[in-house]
Image 1 (spheres, helix red, strand yellow):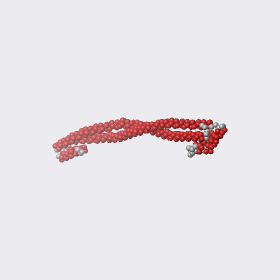
Image 2: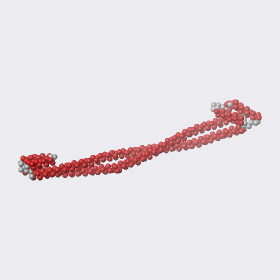
Image 3: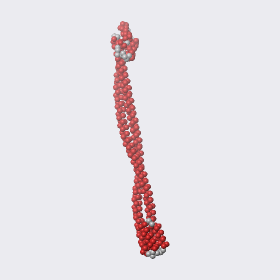
Image 4: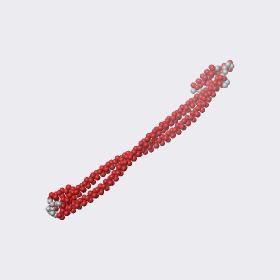
Length: 348
């Protein structure tokens, strides 16, 4: 009995390994073994001592086991198919989700960056404005001081001229000789030379007085009148200078106040607010960049997981194909063994 089982297993092994001739019958593939098996069957008929039932039952059990394994494999394969499809769908949904997140984060980051750049541009413009206004303010302040100094000098000149005229008038009242005339002439020349419209006629009149030996009262009166007119003109000019300089100073100081107010707003409100808003935008950009990087990382993980799942399914499908093919080959081999038993007249 053990000998027959051994022969059957040998037949199975030969059938599995011989791929080129496995479609042929056992008798055609291995005639010597087949004859040996047939002779053993004839020996059983003659001696009535050999029993093939256990071998046949073992073969039938093996066939059932292989068939069940094939069925289990197909069931497991179908289950794995559904599970793999679910996994692929899950990762595909994740990929879609993360792609949307990446796109949205990129749009948000671009908007934040644009807003930040706009704030920076406003800050740069405000700093430039602060510098320009500071320059204008300092120039105006210097101009106010220069104008005040010039006005003071002009007023002093008017006052000195008026004082000189008053002194000349006093000298004219006691004009008796050339020495006193020279004193008047020097005073007038020192302080009134710029007043040509009055100074030149005075010089001529004083010369005429000298020629008349200081006795021409009409000429002295004429000079006195000229000096009084000049004094009145100087006082009027002085008043106009005071009024115009005060008006200009008031306008300049008002403009200076405007500059100071502008600089105060820039330094205490505009620039601090812009810098604070830029810091806020920088923090938002950093946070959004982190979210974008996380979304990209999650997207890559989902893509890697999908690829791994797809690759795993290819491996699983190939394994199923090989297993099913092996099971089919085994079942085919068993059928060939059974057919060989039938030809040998062994009852199943």
